[in-house]
Length: 639
Image (cartoon, rainbow, N blue to C red):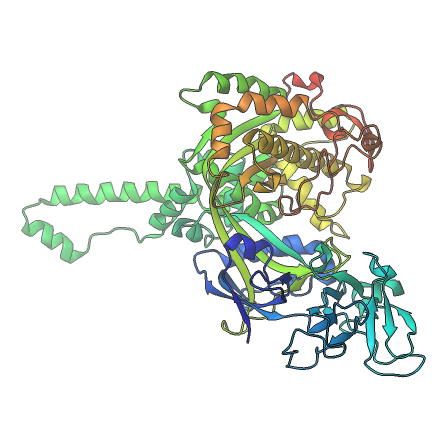
């Protein structure tokens, strides 16, 4: 009978997932999550979620499996409600050191009824806490050899740790002849790793022996999306070329001045309505009510003028017209905007909400906020805002074992859910929390690149230099995916993509340093906060990733009371690392100064380094003469 557990959503989303092994809290048993019963979520947009997962899984190549090209009919969004587990592993070890026999019940539905060892009659039986894992995702119990290679006795083995905590020191001992043999995990029989990964290293075929609770045994993989629930946004996604419209909002196209996504949808629906004409029956009704022919003629003329105005508005605000204007003003082709639309929509939506406050447009800023405005300029930011209602959708979509990084492991979906037509479950949770949103100044980033002798130029044919400059960074990251060998931001950017490495390294490093200092000032654990990076928009957000507790409202308090302290510490306290000069010689990047916990960074702590901010030697592109916070960049400049 399966073990039943009731857990909080955070526990399920980041730990207690199908395939995870744990120490059962109500007994001394070790168990494995068998399945999760959930309620289907139909409010979230499955298409956008799958696009985010696909983008993240691209770094795995063929090892991404079904996530390489996910279809909506293959997946179901579930909000976890109940967790069920089974006893695992079903291998028992006598705790009497003079006995130590290991009993394997892996192929049996039965388990020992008594807790006393049936061999020595004295020792207590406990589940063996070791398992075998492989980077393909397979997990098996650690079992003793079938027979002794010396006396050929079967199923009579003890495990001797020889007083060590290192598995490499453990041995199997034949209880009959006392022959010793080392532990060997064996080769994985669940995959053909050489063919699947293209790695001919025979060592990679071997399974690893680990304590079941070790981190390497189970790595959950998740995606995070900025989600704006509501029918209006879903209707917007149904508009032809909606990514182009979202991009036009981002670059602030004049045609969309005083517009919002919601208003644009409403106008499109109104424009699509049939034009008004008076029928003969309606004219007769007007006459019956005493209206003259001249009055009816005037009404017809007015309606014709209104129809012409609406048609002109419809033409100027049609997706085709907007696309033409966008490509002319920026010089960037439509295909780039179509690819970037989802990210740019996420960059736009928070600022169309009445729940977002911009530091530079506050009606009554307090003295601390006024002081912070000057620091923002020194930090090279164009915008710093507080979103008091920042809905983040967390989607845990799969897992890996033995390794966490792309290409080193297989990205596995969770087992198909039998209660939802055999679809693969995506476990979702939406958190309404506060967030601080930061956008870099594109003109300063441009000057910074030029000062470091990188050749940057506006897209050809652009008619608006300022919009073209913002578009350059959108195209910079979009082009990574269009190379002969596509590059993603979840892998190391090399000197072959020096501009992208510089810009993303700058943005990513700033995001981590801002988060670390925010957690310190708020008195929070760093894992209570997470980052959300939008590279094409030169933006990042720091948000609370817990739904309850001290994190709620912490960033709002920071924005209202401690901005100068926060920004000042980011600017002054992040130049050095306690491991300098060693850390500095390794690119100014280590777990102390720039790294975040795995649950806080979705880019695997890659492409980071203090040289992007302060100058120095980067491990990939070499010397960076001017950091982004160099005082010489504080002057104004035009593209």
